[in-house]
Length: 420
Ligand code: ASP
Image 1 (cartoon, helix red, strand yellow):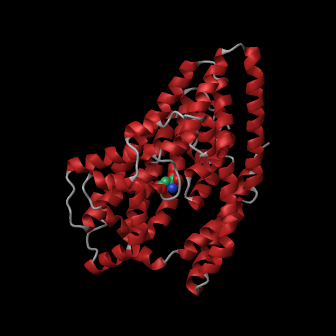
Image 2 (cartoon, helix red, strand yellow):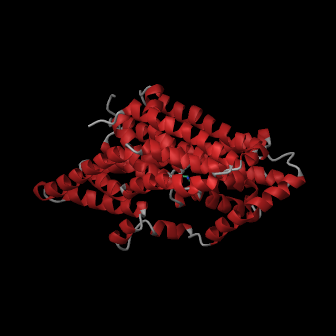
Image 3 (cartoon, helix red, strand yellow):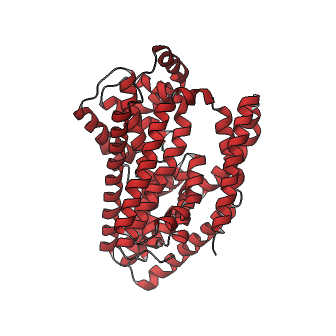
């Protein structure tokens, strides 16, 4: 069964546009509370439905994918390539962000009054983020946390990396027992996987309404005035994101695959729109996987591993945002960042993006880690709080684009990319 690709995309796109218009109208005419109370829940229904299937989908698809590989070395190769791709593109993203911020200087020329106002407006939200940062686990904890003490708890709490770990172990073990014993298990989970994909199709029917509601409530709550104050900063982030997609991913796809760029970007549009409106790469995962398999021809073996991993550890858009934001905040404070401080940003931002799952707003928590590492007071995150949600939407769309380009590149290198 196939998704009605173009038609679905067009409907979601119309939902997005109408949501923007409705949100702006609500903001202007002062009925954004009505939108929060009665329209937003439709978006929440959509996000809940789609989040509901993330864990079973990741587990069933990865188990079947691993068990059907028949070769643990191949799994190792796919893993190595995937992680290498993720780390390289993340580092490139931060370098693009740092270069742009140094050349275009978005933080220079912000008046002291504006600065004070921004600090005041964003203080409350920034404080919430700072509290979360102080509880962050160490690198060793993050690594140890890959192994679940109890897989059922990992499922219940939606810990994707632990679910991945357990599915991999179980998939590998399945290849080691006699085929007759393994087959019923694999068949069962293959069936579960098919059912979940069918559920994705059902949920996607309400995607246009969900996207409309999500966007309308974000724009309804959002003061457009603040966007103008922070226009230069927001523009630098967005230019960086566009450059990263156009240069880094397009080049990678051109060099390593024979897939036409048009096919790639057309195929991933539903996932990009859902990522943009939900601000969560984890919630978008079922759609991302669907696009990879049905629209781009990536095999289950690669997509079921690379995409859940990417939704959790690969956040190029977020990393680029952190590069620009750290330099922006330093510029507003009149601090000069040395080369070694900028290299610290690259390192911390790359590592920070590994430790946190893709959910709305986590980029600010990891930004706090970056600011800490270069000695910028965390309270200054308040400066950019006003445009955080909008930039979160843009960077999430880029994050999943990065995951999908990795899946295509790795699949092509392993001969696992079907012609579409
Ligand atoms: N919302 C982003 C994601 O889910 C993470 C972030 O940048 O806040 O990918």
